[in-house]
Image 1 (cartoon, rainbow, N blue to C red):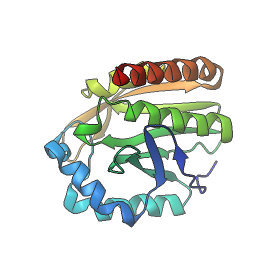
Image 2 (tube, rainbow, N blue to C red):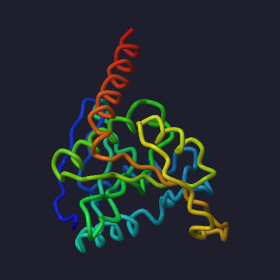
Image 3 (cartoon, rainbow, N blue to C red):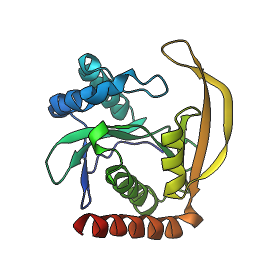
Length: 202
């Protein structure tokens, strides 16, 4: 499996646009919010390194190893983060959703949840994946809780899996959703998003 196609995925809250240098200034501003890039347990590019990160992700896309998107809020038009498909399996149709981050102001708004619904729909309904994987740092409890809330199940923990930029050894928590679980996961996500929209309208 290789990731060469780059579709635009549109929902009611967010649009996932194929990542380009046109997103640079918006992504710089998003990463600068609350100095998000300083968090040691996640990997958010420094605003000054954003152009290099866009180029890196585009290069991996050209090699069929990654499908990167910029996340844009429909209500304001602001670019608020990045997300990707990565690590496509050579032996089976499965991908990982990762390298994801959102501006502090977009967290807890349903933007991440709808972005994941868009990505999962594309993965299962268009690419016909048999599984979609998520990985996160053991200490990133916000991310772990958000992944579990999507309906993903924890597969295990990879102890001493990698070393971060500051030299801290990372334990990586692995989650997945398999094809047979996707219909129930989709209903749950759609219900959650509809409930959130109704609450915001009151």
